[in-house]
Length: 212
Length: 212
DNA sequence: ACACGTCGGGACGCAACCGTACCGTCGTTG
DNA sequence: CAACGACGGTACGGTTGCGTCCCGACGTGT
Image (tube, rainbow over all chains, first blue to last red; front, side, top):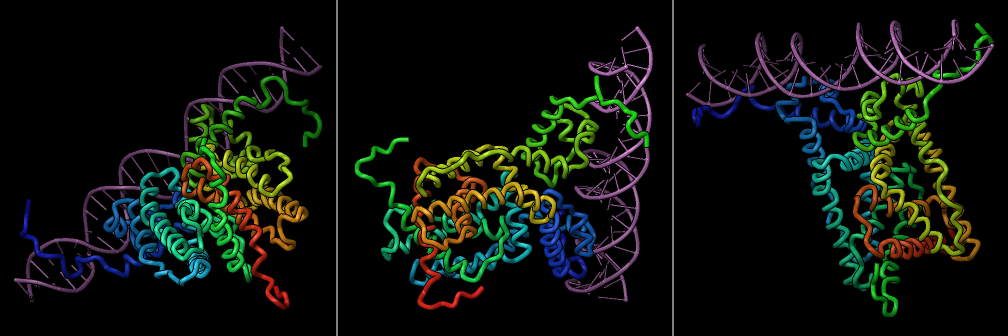
């Protein structure tokens, strides 16, 4: 009904970008401060200095607000990442990841949402698409290039490789929250590179009817 | 006041162990279901089939209840763990960790509490003492034995080693929640062993006046 | 210059939870 | 057998947050 009679919104009747940004910023801070479980729209509104209505006009629910904002914040990052050697790629990747996880907000929000994803399917799906898919794609390409160069054996499992690449640094920065020491990243590059190379060392041994 | 006149509690005036156990069990389930942030005493009481008073008589607060119960549940585990070889120790450790993290309750509670620890100092301290201290001790001994046997170079950093050992498996099971495939753990043993061995390959180059 | 229509803000009803006070129940002690 | 005293459960005020409704303000298009 009322089909095409309305003219387009204009004047004061349009969302103000500065308020949208203030809400987004307040959300990230609230999320880091209290976590998704205790996140309240009222607290976000208070912190942003706006009213609840301002938020509900833009997003339909708490989940919508969080996912849309997080996706927007996480999207469009990571450079091309192709240095020509496995160790170079790893070093660059680690620097990027370490830089991202060193951000106080990110280091609190990411583990929180990942934990929440274990019990909220919608969050799980979204993070799956935004974070892990990109992660696997990057990891997969990194491995594929290394295999082409002959730095890694053919048949290297990309999934296991991603675990080996991401796991230690994530554990240290996001879980243990131990600060990086001077040569930590360089050492980690060596360890992970060696670990990746060793990955396929075991599976093939003589015959081996691969049982359970 | 009223110093020593009271006689010791007796009769019905004593905490019932079955109710205490029911509360503990309900707490773990609630914690896995909604997380620490949304945990409510009322929900725990409902799930346990007891009254709130029964909980408040035993623990002073939500935090007290959670920490005491989690510590009790996490304490006193892990066998001696000394198989005679680095790979043997790793394989055994991975099996234990994988088994623990495969428990549906544990795999939801642990990441949740670790994320909460980033913003709650009390939780942080407690987990630090209960989980990470034990972890570092075990990892440290594992490394030390391997160094003694000559399987790892002298000067291997135990902290970095723990990251390398725990990170990948934790990432896969607790964060990515990818199921283990048949030979995953065995492959991981090879990768991590190789990674550990490579850890000290880089730092020493020529002179290097060891700073920091 | 006027009319339009959405904006931001305050107020409201509803629901959930916290922590406590009170009350009847129960089993041991003397 | 009687009295004691802490137990478990219900009921209560106070607080917080959700989602909605109504209001005056505002700036562009006619």
